[in-house]
Length: 331
Image (cartoon, rainbow, N blue to C red):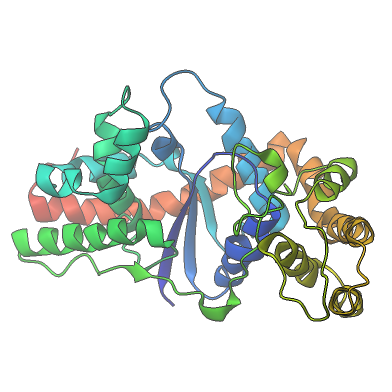
């Protein structure tokens, strides 16, 4: 059984695309591997420039992942800042991370352009903190998107550099966890190809959205004037609605509207009404769990305590060995 580590940024709320994509993969993964899922509150500090609702965001993301099926009995679920070993390993890795390789990092250059008034050291050393999150548990698999592949490559470099410097075979090389064909990509309601946390909140259906909010968002979804010939190729906006419908509706419902489109008989208002109700039904149990779990602080604190204990046991073993290898004194 391989060790898998994945960080969850406490920004925004989970939307339908998150759930049908990464979150469902996490739920499957937790029963197949030794999993550590952490809420990356340290990482969130690299892009904020003042007081924020970080604590509230951490709670929200914890609640929503639990409501979606993360099982604290199967995986360790903890908050990044509650594991001091991560910060210690981050410090040690920074001693052997070089300015040139950090400044060449694509994500650093992009973030620096976007926040010229807040180009901080944490932003520069983001890859070493990510490496510490992974290496502290000696993980071999990491679920990452394409934008994080460079960071994962740097993690392997840091791990191999440590092994070579101290002539040990201590850190394994972590590689991307490939979900294969299981990943579902859900497009946006605004005609874009991705449902995401954009400035246009009408792009996404959030799992915590009320039924009325879902109906309003879907009815405002972008379409076109309709097909003018049979079996006409769909525009991106219309294709988006069909992709979402295929994911949440019954097969016969999807087939009905597909046939109506092909025969130039479709009424988008009718399709949207049906789609909204199907989304509401699809997300109902999750929405109810979010409401229930949000009010149970004792349960949330217990989950985090148990997850942190599991993570601490793993991280403490790693740091004991690292201190011994480096020659740091034990207290």
